[in-house]
Image 1 (cartoon, helix red, strand yellow):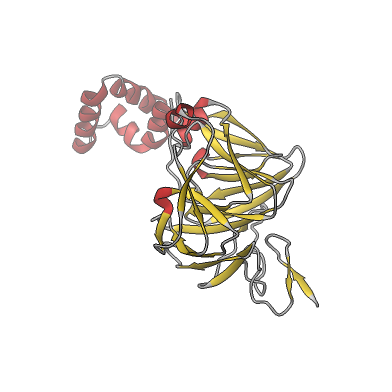
Image 2 (image 1 turned 120 degrees about the vertical axis):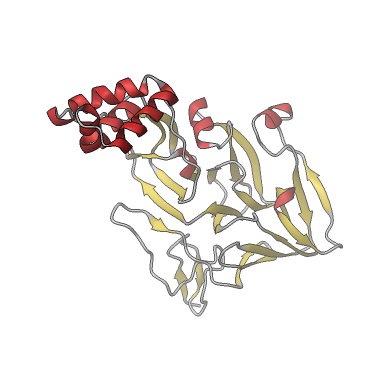
Amino acid sequence: MQRIACRWCRAQTPADALSCDRCGAPLDARDKVTDSGWREAPRLRNLTEIHFGASTVQVDGAVVPVAEMTLDPSDTVFFEHHAMLWKDHTVPMAVMSSPGGMQRLLGDMPFVLSVARGPGRLAFSRDAAGSLVVLPVDPGMEIDVRGHAMLAASGTLSYAFVKVPGLRTALMGGTGMYQDQFTATAPGVLILHGYGTVFERTLAAGESLQLEPGGFLYKDASVTLESVNVDIAAAPDASKTAQGMQTAKQFAGKGFRGLKAMRELMSDGVAGAAGQLLSGGGAALGNVFSSNSRLVMTRLTGPGRVGMQSMYQHRVTD
């Protein structure tokens, strides 16, 4: 039988199939890759079917996607309990034995993971706009995932958690202090929910990039992650804005009263220093309020894959 290699996960699928059997990526669509090497995660067509073990996952919904599973009696899945949308009343449920105890609770991690066993049907959704990404995981692979991004995972995967290097990255990215870690004892799948659109890039050995912490979604275990501070540089000095800059500093030093006074001067069209602040005030005020500010970024260094989500909560620190 002739087979075709999926462009997303490289799995072999019968040549007459319309989508990949393991990740659901359309086989008749080309990769969309930016000049910098980011490729968009495949947009799974409605009712696309994915298989793991003897079970089936069917993906539906473009805005708030849903993953509906038909579980075989020989298969299980685990998940955060609030991610389950519905289930057949005959599907048995259990609690997964997970390490960590109080450490998980303090680290903003799910204290309890639920397990469902076939036979029967159940469905999962994150109740938020975004994209579903299906990552096949084979024995020997290890994937680190942003906290609370897992929608569901096949029971063939082992679950643990790793501490995020740098407390500031955890706090600024809103990711919590830990990441989920998945390894495989047998071939399985990991279904993630990414906010907005999901992109993936493969870094070469030693290649690094700086990513907004809130945009991080997943990475191969071979990719290192650390937090870095990026100073927001002051605008270059210019003689025409020097006096306006000094005036802006004087106003800024007075807090809200200064801002109110500056607004009154600007509304009255006062000449001189305030006038310069009006004409060159963008640069002047930029200097005042950004000279002591910095961004906290996540530096990722290859080799390996990095996944990011395009929708996130951005934070700036002083």
